[in-house]
Amino acid sequence: MGRAFEVRKRSMAKTAGQKSKVYSKYGKQLYVAAKNGSPDPEMNPTLLGLIEKAKRDQVPAHVIDKAIEKAKGAGGEDFAHARYEGFGPGNCSVIVDCLTDNNNRTITDVRTCFTKTGSKMGAPGSVSHFFDHLAILSFKGDNADEVMEAMLAADVDITDVESEDGYITVFAPTTEFYNAKSALQEAFPDAELEVAEITFVPQSQVELSGDDVATFEKFLTMLNDCEDVQDVYHNAVLPQ
Picture 1: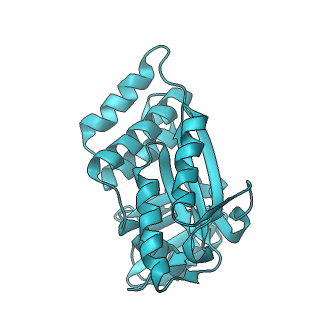
Picture 2: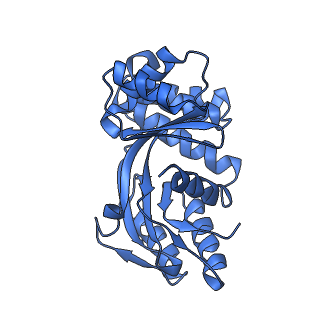
Picture 3: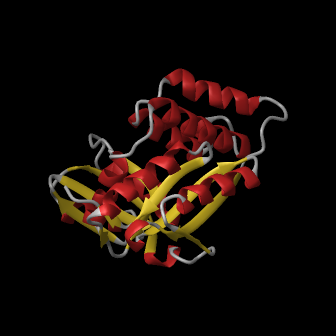
């Protein structure tokens, strides 16, 4: 499971958008988290987690502060979550998560990405059952048994703990994200979490080859260029 997650992360990194796109994505997510909860990170775990993730992705402090300050104002934009599923090049499974203030624009943009790469959008739930929706926390280390014991001692329900390539990765149900994170930070105060997120992990992989590789990279680039797309999950494996 851990290897599949890392493969997905590497695949996505190959087509990561420009900094402005990353800043815009986090700005929107931070705004929604602060608007729907408290603008005080200490009172809003979702917002705090996003701030930490944004910092790991080198989002400047002024971008983070601007989004939170904007959320403190009256009125403002009204964003809604939208999720689209389908089959990409090579018949890989794809989930596209969006934040939108205009559903017609968003679905048109996403559908265009599918259509222009010979891909096919599916109905809600058509591919999500091929993924596990999990909380994932990863940091440098090599003693999986010690981490497992710490989770059990804190009464945290976990799915798996893996040790691979000098990293410990904890997989847990999404509802246990903050409990697992708190338990890790308490048991291993010097550990720096390099991954701390809720994500979709593919249950199996589809290895792409030939023309499908270039088409898939074009597909991801088009999706990343869409204004409302926040995250793209897939089970494709590209040649190294």
